Length: 214
Length: 276
Figure (tube, one colour):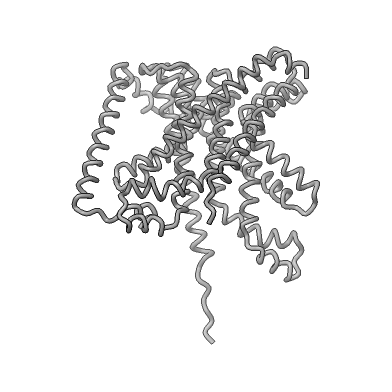
């Protein structure tokens, strides 16, 4: 147990990096994901195709390959950003595809009649999306999006592979020095479980708050 | 008619014009982005023919294909072991024996909320300290199996729970034991129902094998790293490898989709009605 307390500053630094990467990438992925979904159900065929291609591409490519591509290869074409920023950007565009999938499945759960009624009232595409369909769809996807966010917490650990010192990397570093793997890795694991638990509980809370009483 | 098209009417003349304008704007923006990107690549000399020529030659491809074989080998092992272990866990979580249920639930909840990379670091740096030094392949396969078993267990459990109770009850009333009912009646239907989730889990675990990059196991991304360090064509190598992953996963989903429609056609054939 002592080894955890002795190295608490390093581990907490790592935990803090994980938390803020998750927060920034999570908000970014939510915004981008909703935009992609809007494009995917829009009346413009080219936008629909682009959004479909975007989602298919990022659902089928490993996040680690993207991280390596962005961090090690793109500087060769003059795109150089700070390491952590690059990792966050990659996580945003990667998880946005998953958010888009989740939100689209939510749109599919909104009853046909709702959209038809909106159309019958003379609402335009954007009005019916903004006022009728999305408010219901987003309520239905709180849980799935929460699962995407938990997956995002797990995926921030991939940033350790390209040199960002977040929780996994700092645990590994401390272990390489102290050689006490059990307390260190168990501690890091518990921190991840706590993060996932917080997200799970808050999505449960949000879901109950926004649920429509029918 | 797809579900998305209910959001808007069949466009009238004005709507058609607007759609046309939006399409043109999209195309212009898209072309601008592509041109800017290509210009960025070209101005740094990344589009030069000699930088891409190696990828038209066999030695590079044979080198990368060895990596692809490693990727597929690891993915197949993780899929088989993870699915088998996951099925056991799912049955455990639904078993009437309480300790068994708790054990399975605890395992699933823990393994689902641990990053795979952390598990990999444990097998790489912690287990050898306790005298367990696995071969390279298993250093990748073991942590992935631990994580994916939990995911498979949740998928299978969802499928079993989604079966109508009547199926199990009917089987029991025919005199089957619980095990027989599960094996002969519930599971075959449940597994078919969750086939799409299983496929997306397969895609996800194939993506996870890219962590062999950390383990230094000979798979696609690790080979790409070695190749890029040798030929200094970072952009080209990593782009090509990313596309290989894309093609593999898309063909995996495609094949699974085709298989699924095929089996559905076979199993869901209308039962011929007997005319009295």
